[in-house]
Length: 209
Image (cartoon, rainbow, N blue to C red; front, top):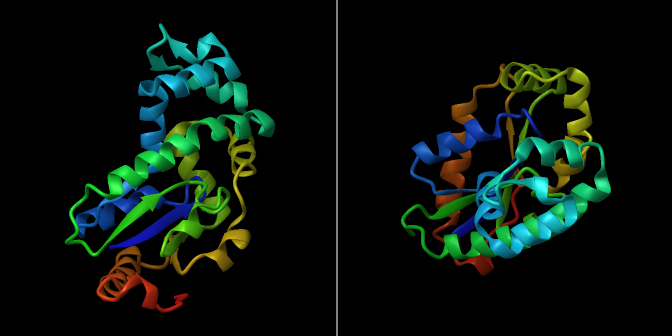
């Protein structure tokens, strides 16, 4: 079974794209959601987060105080990096365990991560998909979704690589600019990956569509 990464900047529409792949019968590991679960259930991770950010990181040492953590690491790259160093190794192990349990009939699975390329996870996967969208469209999506200012959105975007840095590392590009239709792009990639999943992984072609 092929392992396929999928990423995109905040507001790119990556979640919608993953949902369409799921409709096609493809299993998706959502790193962002699973990271939040791990941060609440993994006692070692919780201990390290409290050590880094303080007791206020959790409500009654149980549920994650997301607002506090977001404000704590906001615009502080060193703290964000330290938090990622705690959470990402646990997520990586969890994803590997998950991948061994999912049905094999799909031929491939998706591993979603907002920082797939920044962390180097993409190197461990067979192929990688990048969802792109113009910055202004992304900003409008986030403003309507999260009700935060344009200035704060741009600061969040600066914590991720620009698409220009990611494009050379991706095998497939999905353009979500509200002009190009999403489903035909996804179906083309789906067919390609289904075909390649029938080949031995040591004989997979180098592609960039």
